[in-house]
Image (cartoon, rainbow, N blue to C red; front, side, top):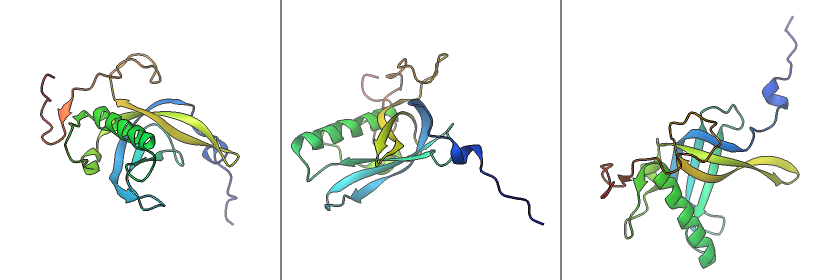
Length: 157
């Protein structure tokens, strides 16, 4: 006779609380939006969060929206590169693939969508050694900046 199947804590529990979480960028590539505009697509796999909340995606639409929307997407994308220790420079080609495998921290918030709470990434920062809780803002600029092309220390670093 088979044992009865029971619900697990992860089945009935909710998403992790808002705050900063370490993770690895497992996917970083170009995609097209629903309106055929180019965007950078990221998947971050969180280290200390269980399924189904351990894989989060983010999108950076870089054309075809309002100028303000593009500016916001570009600025957010720069924070991802910097969180991974890379320093994008004006005139350099945007190459999302260099982000894959980098360990960063993401700030999670709860968002109500269609009546359910889901996780949203609201910030990126370098992983920094800290003795306090992971959700404090200390060490947000602690990464040693590296050039996007060579991974050598950037000028002035």
